[in-house]
Length: 297
Image 1 (cartoon, rainbow, N blue to C red):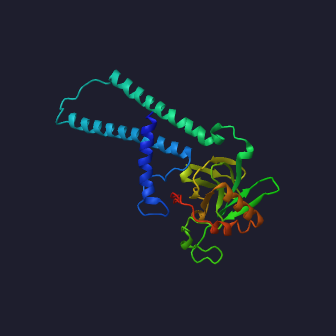
Image 2: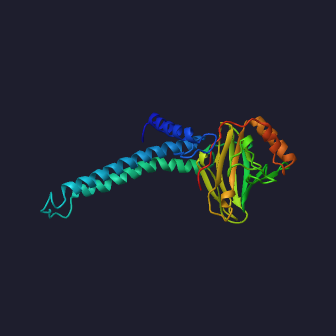
């Protein structure tokens, strides 16, 4: 596997390309992944860059080999074809080398699959330090339940803002993004482990947050789980990534990561009036700086 320093260099270069074109608002022609904001996402991007190099080398080698064969062994250059049927050394090489490449890739991918799947990467985090949020996918909006199974439980519905909508107007002046901003964003604290329990009430949806490299189906009757830990406050955007019906494109995910003190104040406001979802308090805050656009469906 490539050295850690080289990986971080490759990751930084890729992140700069993405950040330059996609920070704060959608920009036509943006390329590459969104800049990662969790340690898991950074590891996924570094692994992607490594595999991309392997693929590029293989593609270049196979292309050069094909060109060489076409020039060296065409009918004009080689009118009398050889009669041998196989070459033992070549057959061993083309069997062993791909196996070694796949083992190399597995060495990097299996730990990442474990890290994404097993809560908190297997760390023993006390339950009182974990923030639990239950997510329901609906046709066509999300709702988020906080403090589940306690006397402080409350649920906030999150629906897309629309231009000209009297109830949920899109207000670009305050930083709203078309097809991405919601009336009541999901909110989580910075620097804390957040455990998401995800399901659906009607059809299959998918909760996806590109900057966290997270995506999982929300399936009726089944409870799936994700986790993340984000240290940098900001506003992050995702979308439903499973074709769920005619308004599938109108199910954005707007996630505010706030410092713990602000999160506590938001939670108190949202619990007092879940129908308002603590929106007035959020609007009183300066917009966090880590805004990023969502990926396409």
